[in-house]
Length: 388
Image 1 (cartoon, helix red, strand yellow):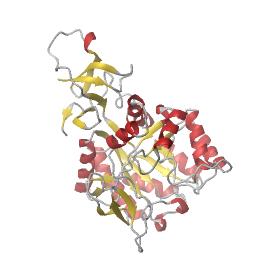
Image 2 (cartoon, one colour):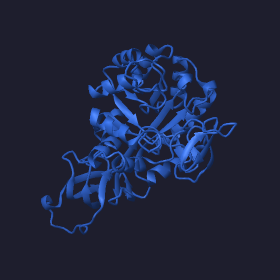
Image 3 (cartoon, helix red, strand yellow):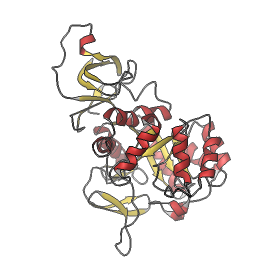
Image 4 (cartoon, one colour):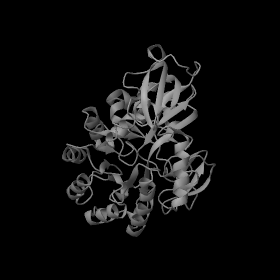
């Protein structure tokens, strides 16, 4: 049995200034204020720790020098373990657009990590996206929507594909959506050049099940008052409670005012903070790969390498989700309680895991992150076991 004491953030009843979380057999067995604890047994001494639910990252391409789109199984495990050691106890392994044979092989490889619990699932970011908004993805690997290819990748992954990013304007969207719903794969709209009308129509078609926007603002036209584009449609849907929008709140992809605006507009229950981390997360500046493309990291910012040395497209993030959480609170001015919801409870809900992850609740898995007051990790527990 384990006992943690500190300021509890992420309970169903709000923050508890001096609280206790008890866990046994991999599950949380008691949560509450010290003053309400009936058992008079010994407790840890009062301290300034923050006790949070384990973080859940819906969008991550790797870390610690290894990328999920091209690593072998050992490298993929190193990447997953790196994020877990920084408090991300639930992680989606994200692929990028690539040749069909590569996607099939990497999905099958990552399935092993899902089956043994190192990953929550596989996220396909492409290849059914818009090449004009490819960002750091290989335009040569982007193809129109192909339901047969989706089924092939899904079969190779042995049912572990949990989400897929696709453009609203891709071919055969309706067929792809039907196949995704049939397999309980979360649709995520992104890397798109669609207008607001098309995006809104696709969101409406996806009604009746969860849907997200892949890294809102990035990989899509800017919001303009006479051409609102997909950003406006996604924000409106999130405001109605019909969509969850991803935000890469790392100080590179979005301005702090933008992050604050989205939180003020749609609230934390409709926002999933994500890292979009690639192989360079946790590493020094240098040369890396994202799928088939070369990436250079300078001053912690990852960009595609170019022949003339000019700045290329931003190529994912180098922050972990706990770093995104910290930046959201410190730089964007979002309350800690709201930021934690968007890094825990909301992503758990869109994956259908809210009954077992994402909050400090009796009966939930004892996935726990203990930090200091500045949100630097101190201890991590996965199903009640520390330091996995």
